[in-house]
Length: 145
Image: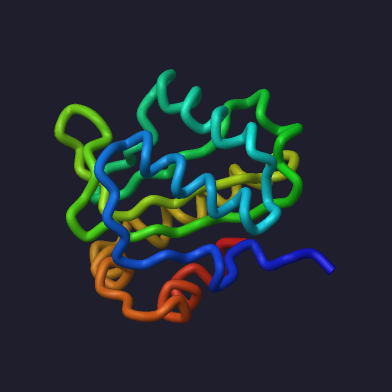
């Protein structure tokens, strides 16, 4: 049976991260550790960030791999990391929520769209940042996968 797109083990709350690279490696590392991607996918996430920032505004960054990283995705999944102090994603853009995405085939497009819908509401951003349990995050993203 396939794993859930977002399980408790994919969520890390109140993490202290100093740099964008550290944030991307941490977010991608969760996906590696839980069997969603292979280790090379994390390098592809960093490569993707060099092409264009994955900072989306509203304290949100959505790091993901390059187009050619599809072979590195074992199954669709996301990781959610909250960074209360924020991490600079360039040009002073402070990300406090990092959502790593790995999608088989074109599933990442649906996931991106659903995450954008959830995170377009300021109230949901506040709920994510103030979450005390993984279950609170899972409830907000219940329709993402």
